Amino acid sequence: MLIIDWIKLELRRQVMKSLLAPSHKKKIREKRERKRKTENRPHQVFYLHQVDDPYSHLCCQILDQLENSYDIEVIPLVVGSPPHLQPLKLKCFKNTILKTQK
Image (cartoon, rainbow, N blue to C red; front, side, top):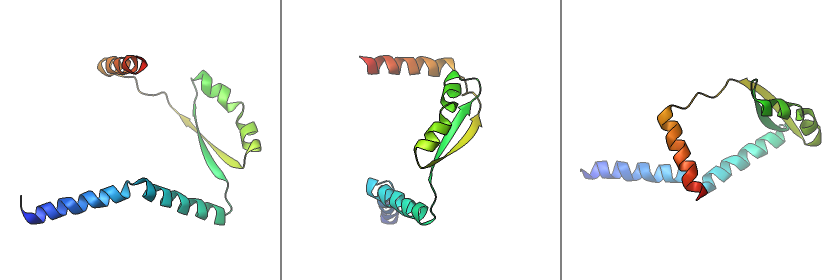
């Protein structure tokens, strides 16, 4: 490997490390929060409603109460059913759950 390739790799690694650092994420979050406050906007909560899901039906009944109790703006979005897991993925998923429960 050439020295230039190694330098490129090292620079890329350092940049990615700094971008993914928790302190960097915290700074971005604080900057966005300051911007939201200066624009006098409430927090936004995206509510994903699935029509054929009974829990979504229960949840949508309390959205007004939630919005009135807190200084938030609820943005409802209708979503479809999640894609069905393929049998192999489902088997791996079940095995993972069983391992974590032990």
